Amino acid sequence: MASLIRITLRSIVNPLPNSSFGNHDVKIIRTITSKLFKNPDEKPKPKPWPYKEKKYTFFHQFIDKTTSRFDDNSKLIVVEGPIAAGKSVFAKQLADDLEMLYMPEANLDMLYVNEYGFDLKSLDSQLPERCRSFDVKNFLLNPRTGMVAAFQMHQYYVKFSQYIDALAHILSTGQGVVLDRCVYSDFVFAEAMYSQGYISRPTYDVYYEVRRRTLQELLRPHLVIYLDLPVPKVQENIQRRNIPSEVKSPALTKEYLTAMEKNYKQKYLKDISKHSELLVYDWSEGGDPEVVVEDIERIDFDAFDLQVSQLRDWVQETEEDWSCLRRKYCNEKDELLAITSVPVFHIPEMLMDPDEAQIWHDVWNNAPGNRYLQGYNTDMGDKSYLFKTSTNYRRTLPLLERRPF
Image (cartoon, rainbow, N blue to C red; front, side):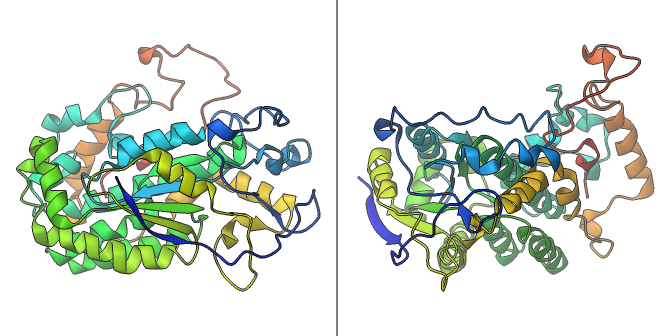
């Protein structure tokens, strides 16, 4: 049974009132409620906005108010913890108990598998070595190759992309989201890699430059749940679940895992607790999600103190401010992802020479489903149109971003 190590709560003060369009301090209210205690007589909210297919324009805000979909569970929860802690199983169960959307940990299939399900990794044999795919499995088995630099930047990129999607989902549907790890904690991997010499100092500096530019565009989570395991227990769990790339990995050393634990506890949790609620559990022997749900239900997310920074991201002045955020995360994903582009010309391991780049470009752009934008590839079953008035403008990732650095 897991034991609760710490709950961080704000001082409870009189909450500021909710308001309609034009008034002040419109916010997501109250606490989080499990489906067992949902009020069956609660007034139904508007249907979810189809943000993946339809833009939310300035004019829509007058007929489709963002806060009209907010309820107790319109929250963003992030589950964190070391490798092999059981985060995924727990996060799925938590999302089910709270009737929230579960988003698994972002991975590089978001880059390598296109909208038609074609796996671009299958093209590696046609590419120069430096242009081939490199995912978590490759890193675990070969952490000292020059490919690790681009790998870590891509890991940050897909987590940033996923976090934007999570915010767009909450603001467009009112449904809360449970994330398995997130972009805010990604630096613990970069720190561990740097401490073991897996990435260079220039790569480390560029990583933090990208992080500095991008995180200011986001809203921090309402709640972070950290499942704590000591390093020896992490190593034991790695052996028990017996994933070959982990068991045989020269990357997952005691030193690497210790560096992750240190940065999680001394940096990430310390900083995020200033902005989000925090629950930390000893998960050495696993735990009961129902107990965690009970702890979550005791948190008053509506308690608010103007003198502290916790949950300030989720208090907006007016309904119009919420609408601006919604347009940003729903309509401007490409622009937000473009912020991750920074010069890397001084980092050889993150560059391709012109001949390699041309080969990569030719192979990937002629792959099944990559020749044209989604919806225009007749060889993949798309219908042929002389004119087309709509398309899936919000893809998993922009096609042009599926490229090595």
